[in-house]
Amino acid sequence: MFLDFMISAFKENKGKDAIIWQGEIYSYEWLLDRMNYWQEVINSEEITAGTVTILETDFSPNSVALFLALVEHGCIFVPLTSSVEANKHEFIKIAQGEVSFSVDNNDHVKITRLPNSANHEFYKKLRQLSHPGLVLFSSGSTGKSKASVHDLLGILEKFKVPRHSLRTITFLLYDHIGGVNTLLYTLSNAGCIVTVQDRSPDSVLAAIEKYKVELLPTSPTFINLILLSEAYKRHNIDSLKTVTYGTEPMPESTLLRFHQLFPNIRLQQTYGLSEVGILRSKSKSSDSLWVKVGGEGFETRVVDGILQIRAESAMMGYLNAPSPFTEDGWFITGDAVEENGEFIKILGRKSEIINVGGEKVYPGEVESVIQEIEAVREVTVYGEKNPITGNIVCAKVSLKGNEDPKKFALYAKKYCGERLQSYKVPIKITIVDEKQHSERFKKVRVI
Image 1: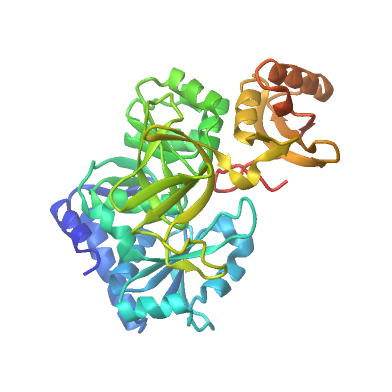
Image 2: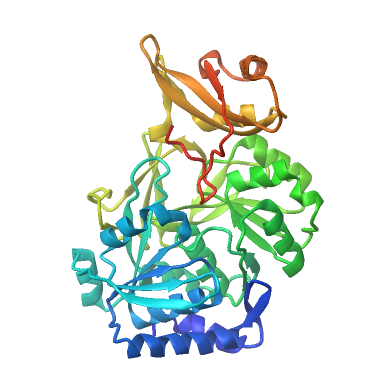
């Protein structure tokens, strides 16, 4: 019904690898059979179309088959991974989850009825349309998580156009718009999903080598970790054709270093949001931060330096926040951009801009310069209130070795002073030991 185009691809490629999980290979024939099995279970459990179903899992054979079965059955689907464990009960309550499918590390599934009544207006609308739904929680990296409700048919539409069949690492999480996009793109083109239980540079690159992975969708933070770990010296990643990156601004220093090391790997910037889905994108080149975004079903415009998007696949709205759309349907992304013809450069979130005496400082620009310093592992730039200039630029830095904090701070300020305008140079540099990214490998900006 909803997935006929995908099921046709599965039937034409029954013998091909669909999923690799914990060293085991599962074919498209297995996936078809398992999807049918879960549809029978859903019926026997008397789970009706329009039921809000929580799926607690990461990528695994059963979680993929269940995803497909729930969509085909017309359920409203809420994926949650262990990365949101601390907020899980709150998220289930916000989503008004009625049934939970919990998939453990051995791929065993437990089904639980939940004491919630799902009566939100968006759910009522989906039931009236007899359409499957998807609820995604934002990462909350700059504040409270919001729950976006999607009519899944809008998201599925773009996957009906056949594209490249690729062996792909499911790096972005199962409950992230990028992870959902990876899953749907790979399956609709009869590619192979290569799962990783441990998202460390060595584990990911070992999987690329072992299973001849061609596509790695990831984040700038993880690309930086690959460079820092030098895991690429321990694994042969010649099969890798493309690395796509998104979710946060890319430091230019990281992009250039990766491209210098791997000139044959195409680096492509992606752009997407829980609220509107993933846009088609084209980087100007592998060593450029300029990108063209849009594609069929998307319109873009820049108003007062902020990117706005109107999308056929846009969410219906938030479960726990007011509508963010303009009256004529544009979503104000909050991302500050620079324009150059058809291309844009993403500068950072408007909410993260540091105003120093009336001048704008984008944290990403300062982070990129500090990241050039050999001793630096990770850096996060932020603003602090100041009675004279309004704000001052500050930086939290974690180092690779045992550098003297005072000497490093002096050197870093001098280094920045030679490369940045004076108001962009950090006044305060703090050395920290903790990691500065979330479970979703995105820089944590809440200081």
